[in-house]
Image (cartoon, rainbow, N blue to C red):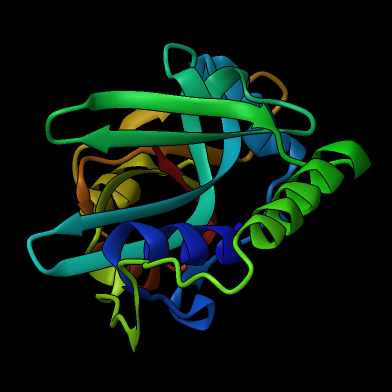
Length: 205
């Protein structure tokens, strides 16, 4: 996902995006507890690779997100991939199809080979620069966050995290799960450090 969003960002913005600069979280911290909370909220957990440009700044990151049932990405499962695009004139559009397996991979490789064979000794202009595009710090991004903490002291939670929406998941005890208001990634990190007993965090798409 990290390498895919780096390639797509490079094509979209016309400059090289280094995948090593993309902040990336995997799914190794996702447990059955998060899945129970997601089910209670009517959401599912998806690993999303995000890239967006605001004026001259580009943000790219990869992380698990809680996706609502009314989101087109909710139903993307198995070997299927989807690219969701928002354009200033186009609006929202999603491209969906097989993204893994021997036949889809072979199809993509053969298509590239055929394209090269058809254009031997031709110079195909591409509006792309090898100059590296510097990404903005992911900590400036704003999100709502689903947070799990040890203990059941709501007063302590609200003292640190402010107004939150508590989620009760069947079979999960001895902890609190809640959704925060919108805040920056940096603000969340500071709140996690101040609270101490944070079990996990998932962004809410």
